[in-house]
Length: 149
Ligand code: RP5
Image 1: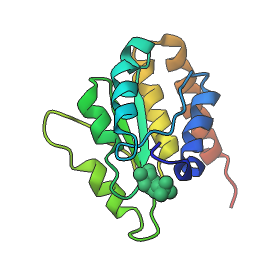
Image 2: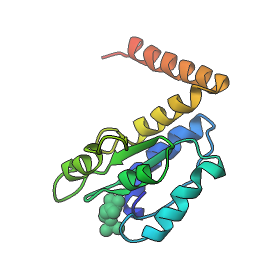
Image 3: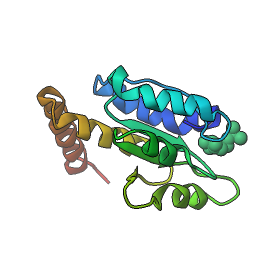
């Protein structure tokens, strides 16, 4: 994430990844304030065994786009809601990537869905994880079916 101020939202991703037993790295790295660290971290990600990068940032939210330019790992962007422009600024900064450098952008503050998408990507080559995803979907459906109003 781009700042510690993003953590309230990004902790949603942490909760989901933990619930699926997926290991993750949790870092504050800014594309603008720490560009050297951004380069070093992203360039080393694949060799550290990282499978997917989730980048949460707000405002002039270039974190995901810069990461995507530095690696061929899948990058998922979480646009943060902002006080000034409600998160539309973050969303547009992240979603309009140039052809050739894709970023998968979720909804404003959509950290949980970013984590679920990451789990889905990892589950393509992980049978046990795919089974956990099926169970998660089943439980979700049962909650809706059994809901009382
Ligand atoms: C972005 O600027 C961060 O991702 C954060 O959402 C926003 C504000 O950062 P702080 O000023 O709170 O550190 O880079």
